[in-house]
Length: 603
Image 1 (cartoon, rainbow, N blue to C red):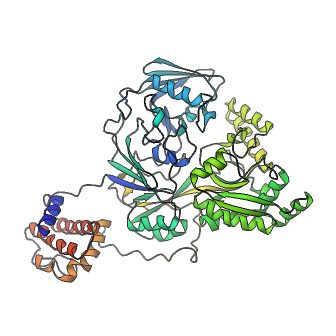
Image 2 (tube, rainbow, N blue to C red):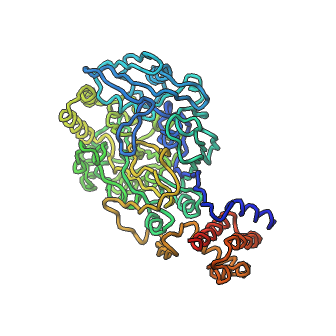
Image 3 (cartoon, helix red, strand yellow):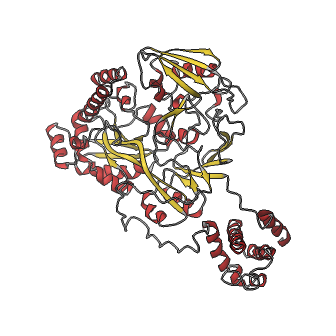
């Protein structure tokens, strides 16, 4: 066994002058498993979190800063009247199955999305399209029924990606796109794996393989990070553990903003919630800060309407639904409402499960009882989002700039007040910036004064990653885990803290250990971990000393200035570690440390 193992270790080094190869695989943690993998036929954010910009691409795309960037269209122009958009397509693009990409695929995709029988969750993006023409293989002309200055922005959504007619029918389980990663496998209930697209038209990704692992339990998510089972968790579900992770030099904590308006959604057409007075009473019974602190451990920004606070057109309307339980009781009494019991459907995210318990207690305090049902994502989509069979639910709407959903008559909370629909229709036809701002102000105020939903907080993006990773998005301008720029090997970045970092609650979070002192500024985290293992195993049994490594894992006097092959020989002691039950992962770390010792001596 020693001979075989020493051969494997020697292969790792090859020669004493060879540098360690950077890893080219990543495991990304996700809270929710997507119900399918077709972004053009599903509403779940988890779909885009796997496939957006990785497997599928649109004519345009969102960058990490939210700006619209070229995608499969290298450039585009719009007519003077704002009704004709011409997209120039990239040449040499192919789908993952080898099918060629051209203007006919764009026409097929847009016509499919706007078809009356389409199951696209964002059909409103395509509602203004009058016709799609493939002018030539590399150019598409889209004619709109009315001017739309935001059409390129609409084409950047995950719902607007381009698919091929040859593979469109099976995208739910076998997604075929044009992106830098190819779908490899989906083990339902566990993970989705992607591999690099060798024929990608753009820059080759640094990663050869990416695995999205589904871990919904916060405790399990924390354990997976600590054990190294996942390399990054861009939307980490255990914010109470962030102080501990931030104190650990193996990790970096990344806190940014999202487009996620987190709301207590109410069924506006179903009695008794059709009564605006009940909705108003509910709004005043809820303490937003209690939910932010109790469910999100201080991460989140209170909102009073369905609009992101970081948007320049945001209006702070939290005062219209301020926490006032006595006022809530008075509104209920004046309206003759008593004995109210409502169903509260909670999907899997931690903000919903934890926040739901807090809201239920606050509603009970003003005389409103709730019956909580915890639902898996597929059940929530079927019963609540599609079937509208609910009273209350908690969900974060992560689509960018989506206040127009309140104008959709068939949307799950069923508002669509005619005055609001007219307001949104006018907004769509308005290009003047000042006029648009005023219309957006009116829209925000109308839904706030109608108490359509309980507006809770803007979801923060709290992520954790291996300190050696770079290229992950800090903010979430759209629901995505874009891996195109992610790579290993850069210097560990400093942890990014929120603008107003919440104070750590000693009772809520595990005590953060003091970070161990670094052995050397140039010593990698892997090598440092290997030193600790080496001291506790090889050094402890004395096998390393006979090869010139002392019991503390340092170079002994007999090896200094000697042939570096002696250091390679020291690896034979690792075989004894293997016999003692040391894992392969730990052995790799020890090998990294011994390699570090050699480099130190060589210089």
